Image (tube, rainbow, N blue to C red; front, side, top):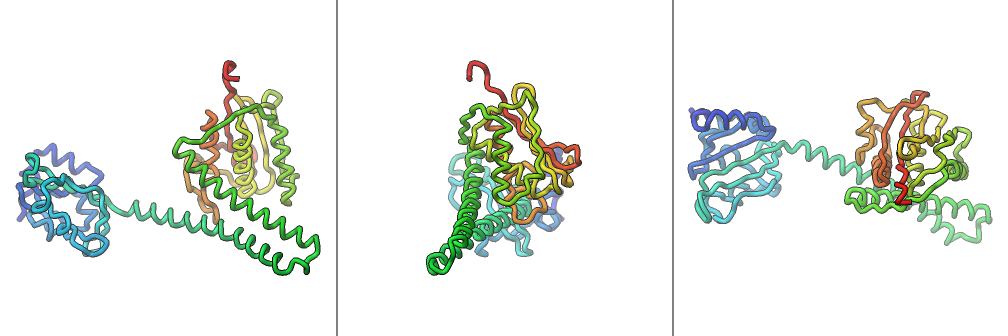
Length: 356
């Protein structure tokens, strides 16, 4: 019967180890015999500490790497290099199939001295698997988003090159317009990915200047009308004291495009474009009459790659909106529109008088 860990460790240390969110397995005394294993380690490994404590850790917990090699044989803390102080996190597998993220530390009494204790911290690999699955889904979505317009560009351009004389001018114009639209889709996706990188690294540059909110709104409506969107759905509401917005023109257009696209996608009909004065600047908002965004999800929607139940979305739109707004010194928030839909606001501070 293994000696209870409490008889070998001060009770405070044992209690603290039991409260840790990670699993802990410890050998000491210069041997590979397990002397302590907390409850979390039991759950992660699927093994009882009654079966592990007092046993050779190499046999009780026979971790293997992805190639099936014994991790203990590869690391050999007790007979290996005496300069080693441990190992960084590694994904390992137990014979039963449990995947474990293991980090180890070797305790030595002095430089180049034999190992006296090995401390292993264990974490469940489920979170990493979910993250990898999310990234795989994102890559799949981005691949689809790129492939679809590129297929159109390739198809129409090849057809035009081979059968140019067979088409009327009107047909050629339609194909070229389709090619241009598909090329714009690819360009926009690549721009979004680059902007995410710049936002994450803090390298996004903003060149703010005074813009007329109503003129920008009208220009966007004209652009949507050219693509076949019924602009009768839009309502422009610009307060008298909010006609001027200090923003980078290109970034301001990008914010509006993302917000309007979001409203058209999730709203049922009317889309509102609002400009109001707020303390120290101007607030630009886009509202819709869709189902809205629940209160508990109004922060998570700005997370990178979050797209809820929407199919074919990269989940970058609102993340970029907030990143661009913050780069201007403002913010982005979600509220509820009077019609019950979403009301998404981006604020743009007025520059200080000495900075104008």
